[in-house]
Length: 340
Image: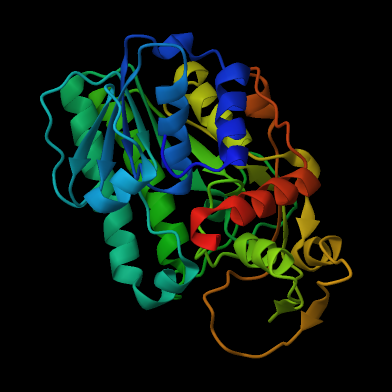
């Protein structure tokens, strides 16, 4: 696999050792958003395992895909926009649907595209699943479907308030709609679909130009710069390391119940943004509060601790704690060719 840092190689090896990949032997797995953080790690784990697993990577940009993956006899690309119908005559056993707009800035500046990509893109994938009589499909949703809940300990059937008159809600509302679309295809057409609601997920594999909060924090540590907070950092949530997220996705895909949703998070990482920033302070990096009213696309202040009992009942548990998550992420960015 090309462009892999040592830490990312180690992570992928850990996934193939922690999850019994034999379930995918001689099977074909289609992955949408395959050059994204989660999609690429799913694909690389399947391709580097000792089993004969075929991967069809649905990507928008062939050049980016070739940089992300080396050529592999079991890897094939479909290069297209997810908003167009997906056609392939190849046999497909599993689908991992990760393609999504993920930048908070886009939720505000491109809310129509955010909604269209979620709904149209997923409908196209569900139509493909329906046509191919697959074994299982998983849709990657988000903790944002819970909105602003009234309590902190959030199980899969606890929902809070979402302001539908805010363009920022384009992401959370479209995720909710798509979850219902998945369940509807399950009910009406017997598509065997499951939903993974991920906590904010990061780790080795993130791009140096990722601007999400965890990436900004990791880059501040890497470059010995102060962490600048533009809010009081009161939002509190739990996080998930990439390898834990991927083993969780594989678990739900192969063992989860159809027409059902599962939280994927590390229950031991529940922390506020301000406390997480302070946790990373060292002699070179301090936390600065520069509070202003600029709209950066941040979500409302929430306190959400995803309850993981349901996925743990399938035999999964998170392994990597928050301190280790940051150590591995910073080390990956340090080794990254773009940073050399």
